[in-house]
Amino acid sequence: MTMTTRTLLGAAGCLLLGSGVSAAGLDDLVAAAKKEGQLTVIALPHDWCGYGALIDGFKAKYGIAVNELNPDGGSGDEIEAIKANKSNTGPQAPDVIDVGLSFGPSAKADGLLQPYKVSTWATIPDAAKDADGYWTGDYYGVLSFAVNADLVKTPPADWSDLLKPEFKGSVALAGDPRSSNQATMGVYAAGLSKGETDAAKAAKAGLDFFAELNKSGNFVPAIGKAASIAQGETPVLVFWDYNALSARDALKDNPKVDVIVPKSGVVAGVYVQAISAYAPHPNAAKLWLEHLYSDEGQIGWLKGYCHPIRFQNLVETGKVPADVLAALPPPAGYAKAKFPTLDEQKAAKTEIAKDWDAVVGATVAK
Image (cartoon, rainbow, N blue to C red; front, top):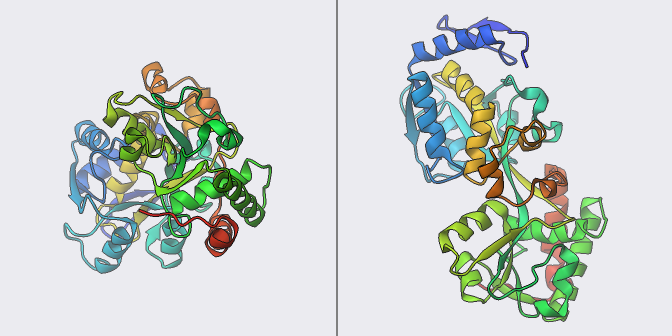
């Protein structure tokens, strides 16, 4: 796909490209980025979502140095780094950020971001991007069941299966649903599996589901982890799929872990990519985004078990390598993923935090 190239000259006279680039425009962008000579990223550990290979690939392809700030930082650290370096063009000023969904709109509202729409913009779901291009969903995980297959001979295919007697003392969340986003979204997902679409009603239905799960003795009121799956304390754990798949690999079949995307109530958690409004290297930042949202970049995230935002498009066009797909749960489950808006997440979290104790009555311990 090509898009009309819109060019603007920045204060330094360098070429800035607006809403995506054509093939010729990409050549101009590469030249302008190479002239800047550097890209500064922040909070990108090499073992997260395949970022090590993505960074190395960018450097090798374009010959542009990558300055890596605070690899172990969080979304809040990234935002603060932009604020602290508004007038600084030195090495501590990030060009790009990769943050949780809620940080995109708030950073836009605070004037901390600049818009850019990549060439593959049309293949990115509308629900996962800012209409004006100030932030763009980059990858996501879905809530899955991580199952100790040595102990569980018939794995659950859907949320309703977790209520069966054979799962007594087996099912756990990966956090306290009153405070953990991963656990909260697990309760919300269970409610969605009941057919509810309104966020508050889905949260209520999820609470009722976990109340039934707790009453039956199937719910384990402990924060599940990879170690608790392996030790048999929580043989079935509601886990973001990228955490579950990484745990599966780390355990090396001791025990064997199955990762299952449920048939219904599939909830996606999205991260977003954005360019700082004060980026010292704006063209390198735009080229970085073109790299990430290309087929090659998206598959790089997938190799790191983070589903790229263009996943369905890549599957439908047959661009995902067979060996990469083989390491993942079947793609059909991901096609059903719901991307809750910030308002929906807020409504669900409020309801679950307020009524978990009264409805479910299980104190989740560390």
